[in-house]
Amino acid sequence: MTNHKTPGEVYNHQADLHATALKQLKIKKSNLGWLRLILGLAVISIIYYLFFNSSLVVWVTVAIAIAIFLSVVSIDADNNAKIAGTERLLDINNQEVAILAGDYYKREDGHNYLPEEHPYAADIDLFGRASIYQYINRCTSEQSKKSLASLLLHSSEKSSIPERQEAAKALAEHIEWRQELQSSGMATPVTLATEQRITSWLNMPAPLTHNFWKVLPHVFTTITLGVAVAYIFDWIPSAAFSFLVFIFFLVALLISAKVNTTYLALSKLGGELNTVEQQLRQVEVIPASSSLLDSYKHFLLSEKKGSGSIKELKEIIQRFDYRLNVFVFVVLNTFLLWDVRQTNSLVKWKAANGTYVPQWFSILANIEILNTLAAITFNHPGWVFPVINNAHFTFSGEDVGHPLIDEKKRVNNSFETKGTGKVSVITGSNMAGKSTFLRSIAVNLVLAQIGAPVCAKRFTFSPVKLYSSMRIADNLAENTSTFYAELKKLKSIIDQVKQHEKVFILLDEILRGTNSLDRHTGSEALIKQLIREQAVAVIATHDVELAALENEFSNAITNYHFDVQVEGEELYFDYKLKGGVCQSMNASLLMKKIGIEI
Image: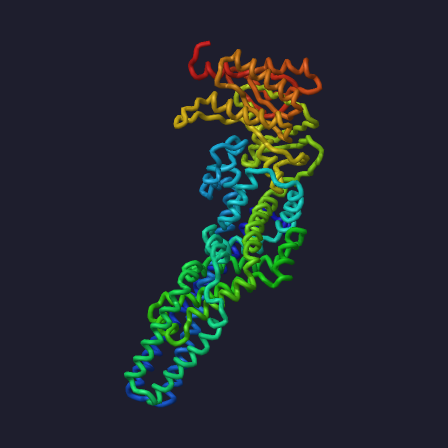
């Protein structure tokens, strides 16, 4: 840990530094405001004096005063940008402190990424309030948020997991760099719509591509400025000058209409392009090293097509946006064919950089995901990076806990299962910890498969597709009962098992929507089918009779349980996974406590 401080101490220290810097910047802002006022009044006074004294000295003084005033305005603008950036950094560190304290429920929860049907997302609180996404996400762009959600929802390529692990470890300690990246993204978050607009423009046929359009602005400007000079020196009368200017304006207006589609495709993108530029520049000077990080840095620097190219595009679009001011539009186009000049610049830029645009957006989305993984790594020094076992199937975890449960309250458990055709049956009383244990396994497996550290002391796994059935709800709109909804979920699991896909199945109280006899019969048949098809499953149940299957399938079924201690009419849970079958149940006592006479 940095300087042997805890993550909370580091964030509080960073917050103090930014708070102090912010105070100084605001004092500077106040001083600059007074200076602008004084200089403004001075300029007005000097201009007023010009009405009575038009000497060269006074004119020079006015020019100097205006130059100083504009310089102060520029310094003030830079200072305001620093204030905004420092406020964002202060907010980032305060948020990290709150997250470590368990207060993360007001953050973006990613509920919009939750599919209506998914093998495990709804069961393990992947999205929504108090979800994994809400807890870990540090992404700012729509692209990176969507990519992070996709990673959580789908198993990663096996080869990409070690690459992300390595990058997360390398980035974790570079807090200032990571927070600057996040701050840049927060200034004007990059959207999918902007990427789509740029992509559409890249696919559009370029206007004014003939060499004639490259020469025309120079010829046109020579003529228009020549006419202006002639008018200034009284070589042509006012009427002729006005007529010619009107003709120039009509010509410019007709030509501008030809490039209007290009302008509309790219207008007002300056803010988001500035974010892309800043973040690409940060990747170019990334202080950490890993195979993945180095590949991004090498691509941007070796091709010399990174932040500098985006800056060039941003400046072209900003010049194009001058046309939003009617007066400026008329003057610049009438005398300089401004729109044609900017269109020519865009055509040239597209030819030189168009093929790199998808890679730029991809790099930034990936780097924000790596920043998310690095934040998890830094915030949880006690967590471990999993070890991948390529042989199907291995799951072995020591002191595995649920990441969203407070460390002071969390009870960790060790568990392992190896080989195929294996079913672990977990019996236990109500509220003893069966469901939480299943979710702990599932959540940590999902984190492991995106390259993140997991909440465990040791963790080895085989990359696998996760399937679960834990939280089943009816659907009134589709006239679907809870029981039928569960059958649909189980069917999808059985289909995968029959195809002998590499899946890991977690089931909690299956077939709960039917009578006890059918429930037991169906559960027993399902377990036997899973064993026969060489599947791997962990099943939590109140039906202790299912544990008796271990006698018939001693090499395939292993019994575990969570129990409860009863003292008088009070229940005590230790939430520890134990071997064997549960011998103590608490349902009768719970019913008695609410008034049911037993």
